[in-house]
Image 1 (spheres, rainbow, N blue to C red):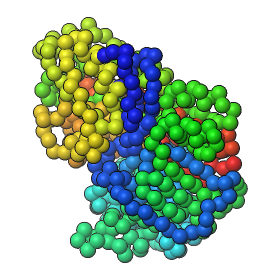
Image 2: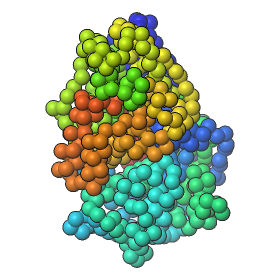
Image 3: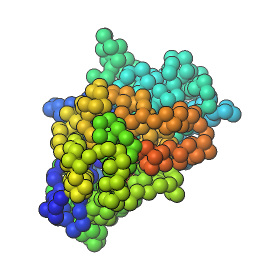
Image 4: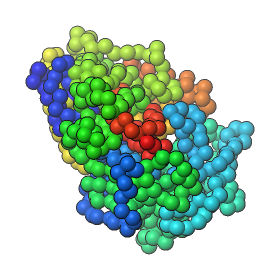
Length: 560
């Protein structure tokens, strides 16, 4: 999920950026990952046809078609971290609890019907839904499936391990099967955020433990290679066909515990269509029902089409440029200078076409812990020049800027601004696998690019979850997403305290963390919060955008 007036938006960029009045060629988010792990790209590149026999497509009026720039690559909750995979995974697999509509702090029962905790919220007990059938045909789901699924995300050591390792370090002992329909999590210390974490549509999905165990690798004792390609969930839709890189077809699962009363769609077709102009044409013609990641000009034009709905809510995504804490940018003064140098209006008004707003730190404005009164950079090249001088960064210095599918235009903006104060920005475009390999590699800070473009959003409404991967000093290389090797002792101390904090402490410490990593010791140029624009046909009802669930769709709630 950007120095001249000849800037153009290159196809394949995730988030466009640039100057006012620029011609827009595309706004494709072809990078479909938060760059949790490089393996995701390799999976998406595989060429394989998986066919699961089932009845032919339902009549067109019962079929929903989503056209998306991304493609399904992984079905394993322990590893999948890209929104294209999650769009499929969250519809064939389910969590214990889910968000209630657009609320980030209200929860609804899913596979758990009720839950409770002790006074300090260190022990959580969940009562499971009876009679839930897996797509494998096995009935019924039990507490053993929950223990296996959640525990495995911690022990597998894949991309999703970070989420529940905040709460659990010994799943065998801390996840207790009380009886077939009761599971208890003994977290050993107060963990008020645990319920929210269980909503994670990426990591919190429950699988058929019996089927998974039957396919474990004899060497690794894990079934990742099999789970990543197979549907073993309980969700409303079942995987019918998977043409890698092209099409996924889901068919409603007749044995779904939620039932099929009402006008649900019976067949879901998800087509990979990289070109935004083609996606726009398809929704205009009515051959597709939903799309997103078009150009701002497209959105404005389609807003006047009476056959379509264009919704543009804000969510929790932050676009930013990491500044590596080494070489010319070792000093906080130098990083403050670049924060003053960036042209935020060019990014938001020019290339986002106004479908975005300023970001003022690593915590998005909708999230717990955001400080609306916090420090806010404004573009000021004179201040930038003076700060560079104080940091002893001389005119003529060359900085390097790396990006994958994301960030070409943000780099162009920064390049043009820095050229005005005597700094050269050398840009390096990498393939997504190469960028991810570099970003999560073990190379020292001094060997890394000075600047890198990235986007991020949280798993749930929690500033620790949003920031610990980005700015904790231990979250470098393969251990997290701190690609700039940022290290600040006060920030580390705040994050250590926030890991088990109550809501009040999270709010207080989040505000302090925001101001340190923005004003005093910037970790990045915090660029923008893009609007999450979706285009739907008028016949599609029931769409609700939750600020945490970016770029994905729960098809069961949609109807005609």
